[in-house]
Amino acid sequence: MSVKEDLDDLVQRLQAAAGDNLESVVLYGSAARGDFHERYSDVNLLVVLKATRGPALDQIAPALQWWTNKKKHRPPLVVTEEELRTSADVFAIEMLDVKTSNRILAGRDVVTAIDVPMNLHRVQLEHDLRTVLLRLRQHYLLAREDPPQLQHALVKSSSTVVTLFRHALLAMGLNAPESRREVATQIATLEALDARPLHAVLDLREDRRIETNLDTLYHQYMDAIAALVHHIDCLAPKQEWQRRPGSTD
Image (cartoon, rainbow, N blue to C red; front, side, top):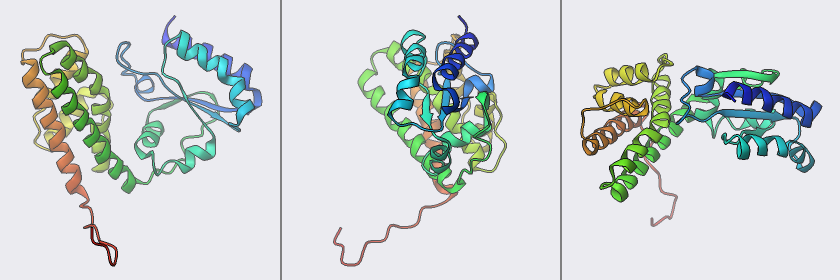
């Protein structure tokens, strides 16, 4: 079955199981944008319920177990509408992604009215970029003599990295293109970064042959992410940390 058929089946199962407690089913991310990759992309879903206490979760558990265990898709996020609204400050990137790239599969639109605080979006953006960079470094240190593992790490990270690059453009007040390659090219042009390693990783993702040595590419890729981290950090300099009165730290 195709992803679309799986989604249609899941919606029917959720509607039958949850009844009036089901507020909305929202598809977001790459599958909603149209750049979904069968091997590397996740199907990202929000299941919005009126109530999420024990019995409500028990009702939908078989449907989600079918979706995750049998169909091998990523588990949906199960939330209430209030949780969506009040979590936009701590999940600013995710909520902005939901707002800008979504399809309502069932129920009503519960995402358009979400207010995402862009000052906190910028903080999460730097945090997530630094996290990706640190994980790539860790993986390199553990697998630098294992090219297949290095390639897998590059390709697996590409979806997250391009998403964060897209959000970097948004943090700069710019319109972010939907195409992964256009995102890489645009941000590289703006920040004088070398776009070639970004495109090479996307080539690997699409099973294309690359000319660059894998070890070299890995370092160039990390350098591009580090350069963007530095720029984001300079966008809104953090205030100097102030010691509390009497602190000896």
